[in-house]
Length: 576
Image (cartoon, rainbow, N blue to C red; front, top):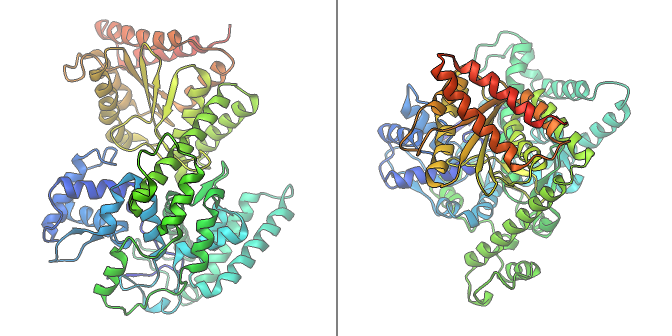
């Protein structure tokens, strides 16, 4: 049982992406840990297996304390949402809810059920003495209600007001504060910086929440030593950012929420009926904090609670029929159980989302100037760090848009889309971010915002493996492009080396062309006004391979190879 000291909504940031909980559960199953006694040794064993796996993990680093690192992975979100039982000297067990989460077709459904049960305080999470009585809320239920009543909720509004809503009985106070904030922004537009208004509002809002602690000089924090009000507030707002990001991602993964390009959340129109049912039928009062742990666990581990509209067979069948899936269903709906119906509906929704992405791709091929400018604007937001924690996700999505626009290959982005075709999460482990099929060859594109040693540790070997494994299975040329905000020299060296060497495991040398984001943007600007043939892209690969060998034989370095290849890339894109 843990205590939390924050005065805003607390939620686990490990893992930050709910999809990675699947990876954790798979490692437990594959490693034979399910049912084994939960000890420090098991925590360390789990972490070592997790670090070696490619299930939802991209270049996991080693840990000096594998037991602590393992416990962090197991006891945060997986336990808080009822997917794992993790109690000392009891069996580590994947719960009924956890088993359902492993089924991709049921992922959104079971996540939604579990999120709606998460509450503060609870038998798992208790308030500290100085916060006693401040929390009385099911956070995801009430934030969903906020979005529904206000029609939308911006990321700033979620951060400032949604996250400070700690008692559902003060719900209307939060609604009124957001409406006032919107009026303030409308009045300030064109007169002063909206970002400064947002920053000032956030600081003043949380300064007031912590006023009694600041006045009493109680400004020490668990994470680090703070000796002044500014240090104290900086730490509190940094933690707030972490929790907001975790809540934001979980809301989006539920499938009920869609996002606009401006990071604004709204209810998916095709899920409005479900949301209305949730807000009408689900009890707003949290379970008693002093409820027996065994009873609370029984409640949390049950994926059939709370009872939602999509647990109703008639409702599921009606939703399925609305898709008119005559060629998709090979069985009579009446002969299916509830979970089979949910699986069919999930597949239909996934197909509809893919159709939205296909429609986006079709439009991108038209090369409209407004789309070109939007792609460039998103790249600028990413470079300026205005996308926050969603930077990697938006980079992957925007790179897919850019590459789709500038050539005629079949470009597949492996991001997970929402009902609007906007990205929910990045590509999972074990696959390239973007895969381009050009008939006679394939191109794998990987993107990252990591820098320095972290970039080398997380990207060099995994990217080589992704490209190499595709190449080993193909009878056609395969090469990669690696695009980073800032390139680390050791990564350039690594890819030059993999290009020179002949790898039996990958059936030849592995060509990966690294470039920084500014270089790619320059390439995109030129290429968006020129029709690139598949042969143009293939020539880049051929040139890279030739120059890699030539520079090696001449005793030159990776810098010689890299500069020559980038010059050739811009030459290919140049408008004649």
